[in-house]
Amino acid sequence: MDIQNRLQANHDKLLETYHANIEDILNLQDTLIHDILPSVNDELQLGPDAAEWAKQWLCDTSSIFRISRRNKFTNSFALESIRKNLIWRLSSLWNTVPLAPMANVHCLPNDVRDPFGRPILVIGTTPMVQSPEESRRLIIALFEQLRIHLTCLHERSTNGDDLPLQYVVLVDLKGLSMQSIDIDLMSWMLREVVPRFPGMLAGVFMLNYSWIHSGMWAIVKRLLPESALSRVFFPSQAELARYFTPSALPEDYGGSLPCLTHLEDPLAMVYALTALPASVVAEGRRQSADSSPSPFLPPVPSIATISPTSLLNPFFGYPVSSSTSRSSLSLHHGRRRKRDLAQTLALLFWIRWKKHITFGLFILTCLLVIRLNGRRLGRIINDIARSRAFFLLRAHSSI
Image (cartoon, rainbow, N blue to C red; front, side):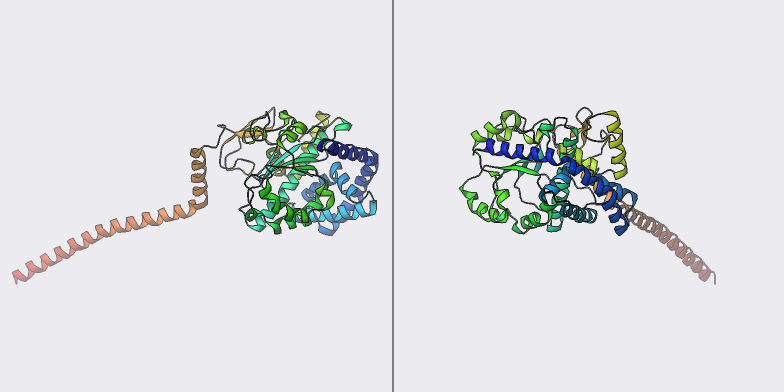
């Protein structure tokens, strides 16, 4: 079975399962919100924002569907799994500092999909330079951003036969080496993170694969279950273009779209959304539901004035501008200018050290004043001494 037929069969089967179980999923969500959430709230003594944030996740029908599917739609198992997941989310994701999308992960624009309406991710294989702990935080934040983005697409969809429940992923192996593979980090991700965000990947396309990577693949595939291995493909350039068509591929991979660095990334908007309080997001969703039958994202504060140093800026260090029609951020000058980065670094240096610099300047000023006054005082003392010697000399001469 070729790539197209296999992915179409999986897509049709998933949609059939979704429509067959949607009533049970909605009933399950009702139980979660009215029974499980109050129980967790009492157990953990959640505040209003935390409780609202937890409820938003329980209202995510596509996520609850994927977890239930993983548990064979057995209610008792699904309820226990979701409850454990909720407690993990409150300890690992709630009230944490929002992290910008990883630099080597790009989501193609929302109107660019695979033949079955699934959004497309492009992942580079550049090594992570952060510490192991920071890398883990980035991976968890990335999965949460992907979940939110997929949920927004799902809520916006009006075609029951084209519900986006999963991603297709292009993994660019160019530049990958054995030294850059962190087996421990990958094992942790597959063991601790993927089970908490199940069923989000429909297929993975390995690009620029060569014999150099065969040894690395032999190691990695031992970490993957058989069900995951069946969704990994190694297409030629012709097979890639035949499945996606050039209109759904960036220029980097032989398509007609602009190169990745010039394409808007919906994850930037998701990142801005995760920085908002849960109560603001909930109110935005309610207002959007009242005014539009198919909202994509709740209203957020204007992003046209985001500064280069804002946590909401996905191009941290550079000025950005926004398009209200696309609700996206882009570089204000179309590229990363060194002068903008230098200005931002100078500003950050001043913000970080201004107290020390001010105190140092104050001490230096005091020392200069003391030195100048010391010289002046020295001259006065010398003048007094000379005057005293002069009078003593005249008195002695008179005697």
